[in-house]
Image (cartoon, rainbow, N blue to C red; front, top):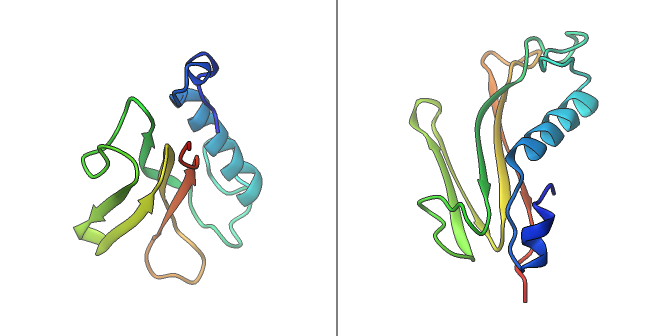
Length: 121
């Protein structure tokens, strides 16, 4: 994960938000054959550009309402899409919610991906 190395030396994990976002977008582009705008290079599987719906970078300085200390339960809800997602996390984590229009699906599909740094002992 992309962290602020000077703060890590002090025992804290602070994500570099821009570097994390760049790495996630690059991973999506490589693994899903997307262009710079996250649009598919061919439309055989993914029909339209991937949309990043939500992102949370939960580290030693930024927590979310459901995570005020570690371990905690990360929660993401979207009543319009009937999504009620909960997952325990044990240390700093990055969460991305993306939406894709996939061939054969009659509506956009939502995917939630997490990257987690294990709890320091």
